[in-house]
Length: 155
Image (cartoon, rainbow, N blue to C red):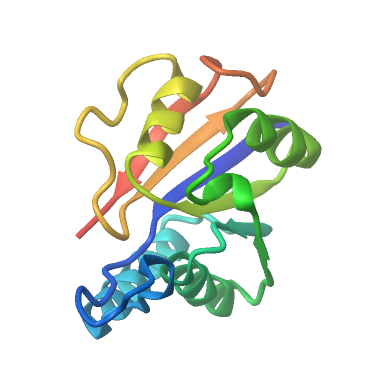
């Protein structure tokens, strides 16, 4: 019973006019790009069962695009936000959902570093670009260094 993780960096947000960085919404270009990435995920047969998102607006809006396509709800998870926490993500989310396909929507550089730690090598040497998805699979234990890097999708 394998577990699949789709790690996605949030889509392109607006860049100006927001005093609070956490409240920047997605740019229309970011929305369009994210919709294309979601379509490619579906075409490749990746069917998420749960979506976890950073509570930062641009990540929540990115997750909502994914959720709409796959008819799922978004669960906000602080450990995917600015206070990124690998231990919580491993124990509370990944290990608690073994055998499922999960989506984590987060931010640079932490999400790409997490993918690299999960695989045990620099699978994403240059990080994740906005809207880019990295797909990993755990065939046995869900631990750091045990993930198999399957694919990455970007435009």
